[in-house]
Image (cartoon, rainbow, N blue to C red):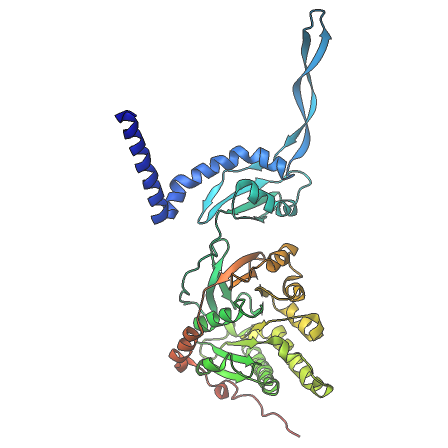
Length: 440
């Protein structure tokens, strides 16, 4: 081999090593400068074949010159002539130029006649395999337009540490599959239902909420029907904690009374909610954390029937009316089924925020996500046990996403509770204006 060949091989090796190092050390710039342009060209070039293979084309009549056989000469040669006639051709949806995203790319399509965004959602998995990407999500910003969001690699494999939450009642608890932060904003979505089996990440999400809300001027109220083993370590930051059903009945009674008292305050001030009140008289918002929701509805014998009815009614009233008066719910449970009674079904209807981790029975996934997109239910059942913290989230924009919460240890949540214990409003002060309960 000549010196020139060795020199060329050396240059190629140096270029390959440099590209590898560039990709490893600063992937965003590598993706924007080199990776995305190549991918965009490939996507545009292959779109006709991909659309045809995924069933997204339509037959349309076009005028075209066609070649038809003529008479066969005695010499054995076939004479042909061209004819201008209408033929059926496969027409692909019009595709705009792809645009880069942090974890892939997105592109806007013009739907063909008779097509709906559901047709593209049904073909999303086939599109992902055709382009060799991790996943393709479909959205429709307006009629006649469909946006394909392609994710090249799963952004939920590794998530960063929990960031600070400077805005009131807003906590960044993880990351969405799009690479965007997963934010729980109680001002926008006041009530949440969080389902998940043991070791699925359900309790970790509650820890992330406590860490995010602890430094904020809010009151935290806990319902821990495990006898207090989950929330007792965070008691310094909790204004009130119920660890049994009897205590839950009393605490829910206080919450209903607090809600009625705030109704009168808003009525006197001519305000529709507490956020329209002057800051000087605005009451502190209350976030209610419920662990093991099913324990509030399970009945061992008929003697508990009245107690369960009181609990169910009070919790439902808080869910129906509490948003305007600064009462917000975050209900967690391993199992949430219709067999627990109509109270659970009614409560679910009031919880517009839905989070479904890995569950042991399909009914819990159906109860949590069943009235949303059926594809969300399929994705929830596909969550692997090796990925704790991964969940299906119904977001405030009306879409559903795969998401993963930041890993927050119990020690970190306990440390936050002790560090910000001085911000805990006393429950007696919050309920000071409530009338004394009537006893027999």
